[in-house]
Amino acid sequence: MLLQIKGKNFYHFDSISSTNSHMLELLSKFKPFDEGTVILADEQTQGRGQQGTHWESNKAENLTFSLYLCPSFLEVEKQFNLSKIICLAIQKVIQSKVDSPVEIKWPNDVYVSSKKIAGILIETVLMNNILKHVVVGIGINVNQTYFKSNTDKATSLKLECGSSFDRLALLEEVLDAIDEYYQQLKNKELASIHDDYLNKLLNLRQARYYMVNGEKVLGKIIGIDEHGRLELIINGNLFLFSNKEIEFILQ
Ligand code: BTN
Image (cartoon, rainbow, N blue to C red; front, side):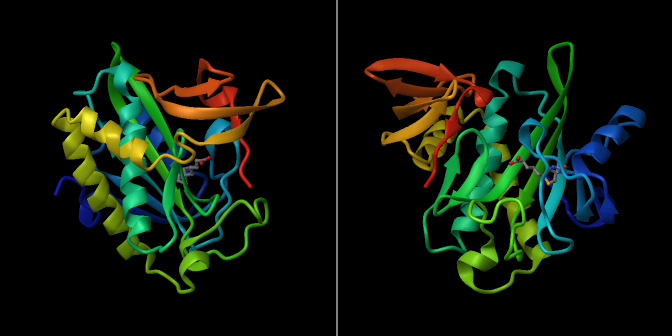
């Protein structure tokens, strides 16, 4: 196994500002960790989400951790494949526990019944156009049953299944699943990773409403391009969107 969560590569904090921030700070100061190192926190006082948002997570109820990868084998232009494999790994583990369909909301969220159950914040450090350090921050809602900031938009394993889960056992499952997909990435199985990602993609080939430049538009996702941009057909024309340019409207 590449990713060992027990022993020297696993740091478990009671409370920390953010596992991603901590890992990035250590990487900027000391020699790099072994690939597969995990920093887990029971509580993050400044948990960070995508686009500068706050990641809400009650103490010791969920999984909030960062995983260190150094995929120097992957061209910078192809780095969206990292998002794909991490989403696929989390989707797979959650789907093994939940009856309802577990889907990937582009670019890198995991949803159950139109509610978010997991989010990913991947932060990279480049050197000479090579992916030197990659910090994969993962938040999975496990045993939390009430979300202050996102009452009707967030869910958890406990809300979906009615019972509590052992967080460390779940972490191990997620790391095993990431390991499996990471090997596929190393083996350059990009076409099959892409197919798997599309197979799990929320709203694929369905007419749905989105917010674009403050306007509500009806569009149909037809794919994801090689840079990870969303391919959407609106009024018969193909448009490409990057993350900040479009918002899903989920009911
Ligand atoms: C999102 O907005 O969907 C991404 C959420 C990512 C949250 C995780 S929790 C562990 C890691 N540390 C952070 O500060 N954020 C990520």
